[in-house]
Amino acid sequence: MKNFEGRVAIVTGAAQGIGRAIADRLAAEGATLAVVDINDEAAQAAAVEIGGDAFSVACDIGDPASVTALHETIVQRAGKLDVLVNAAAIVPFVPWDELTFEEWRRVMRVNLDGIYLMCRAGSDLMRKNGYGRIVNIASNSIFAGTPNMAHYVASKGGILAFTRALATELGPHQITANSVCPGLTDTEGVQQTPHKEAFEFVEMLQAIKGRGKPQDIAPAVAFLASEDAHWITGQALAVDAGMIRW
Ligand SMILES: NC(=O)c1ccc[n+]([C@@H]2O[C@H](COP(=O)([O-])OP(=O)(O)OC[C@H]3O[C@@H](n4cnc5c(N)ncnc54)[C@H](O)[C@@H]3O)[C@@H](O)[C@H]2O)c1
Image 1 (tube, helix red, strand yellow):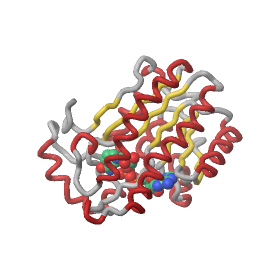
Image 2: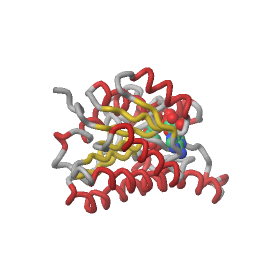
Image 3: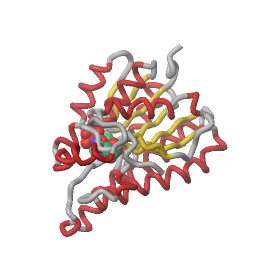
Image 4: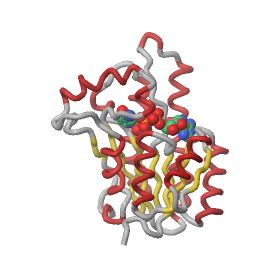
C-alpha cells in the first residue's frame, strides 16, 4: 500500500520548484493532489504532467477570498483534506538600504499572512475528519541571517514560531504541524535572482557537498506528511546537507 492512498493533499506553490517536487512525491505515493498556485497556467500544466487524479486550483494564498474559494473547491472535488503543504512564497533579493515598508508588506502578505490563511481554512477542514498533517516550508536562512532578504527571513522565522504554536492548538484534533527548513535549493525562483550566485559559498558550509535540488527536500516533507509521523509535531527540520545544526 502506498503512503498516501486515499489521502487528499494540497501543495501550494506547486507549479514549480520545491512545491512541484513535493507534489510529484505525494502524488507518486498515491495522494489525490491539488496543485495550488497563483500562476494558473503553470499549475494547470503541472497537474496534467503529474497525471492521475491531480487537479489544479488557482489561488492567491495572501487573499482571504481566494483561500476560501480554494477550500470550497477542495470539498466539492475531493470531499475532505488530509495533508496541507505550504510551499508558496515570495523569495526576494532586496538589500537592507532599499527595503521599504511596501516591500516588507508585499512579502509578509504572502509568506506569513498566506500561511495563516491556509492553516486556518485547512485545519478547519481537517478537523471534520479528526486527522491532518500540516507541513510549512520555512528556510534555513532564519538561522543563518542570510543577507538581502531581511523581510523574508523575518517571515520565515514567523512561520517556524507559528507552526510550533499551531501544533499545540491542533494536537487535540490529531492534526500535526511541522516546518521544514530547506537550504539554498536550485529552483526556477532562485535562478531568477542573484541568490543563484551563492551556491559555491553555501556548499562550503554544507557537511554533504553538492547543489541542493527540489527532489532533495521532498522526501523529508513526505515523511512529516505521512501517517508514520503521527508522534512528531511542532518540530522544525533543517534539510540542507548539514549546513545548519541546532
Ligand atoms: N529555493 C531555495 O533556495 C529555498 C530555500 C529555503 C526555503 N525555500 C522555500 O521553499 C519554498 C519554495 O521555494 P522555491 O525556490 O521552489 O520557489 P519558486 O519561486 O521557484 O516557486 C514558488 C511558487 O510559489 C508561487 N506563489 C508565489 N506567490 C504566491 C501566492 N501569493 N499564492 C500562491 N502561489 C504563489 C509561485 O507562482 C511559484 O510557483 C518557498 O517557501 C521558499 O521560501 C526555498
